[in-house]
Image (cartoon, rainbow, N blue to C red):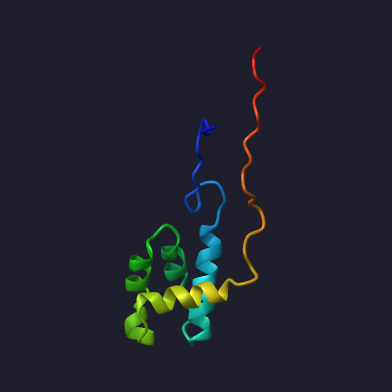
Length: 97
C-alpha cells in the first residue's frame, strides 16, 4: 500500500536545528583558534555551506577547504544531537465500511 502523503523536513522547518549547526561550526572554529564574531555566528543560520565557508574566510584563516569545515563541524556536534525530534509515524485511518 502506498502512503497517502510524504513529509520531508528541511533543516529548520519542523525542528529548529539551525542554531545547533551554527554552534557546532562555532565550536569547531574555536578549536582551531578562531572565535566567531556575533555577525559571523548569525550569518551561519540560513545559509548554504558554500556561503558559510566563503563568509567565514575558512580557506584564508585556516587553509581548509569546504569538506574540512563540514567534517570539523560534524565532529564538534557528536553526542550533542538535538533530542526533540522523532521519526513521524502517520496514524492509521479507520476504514469506512
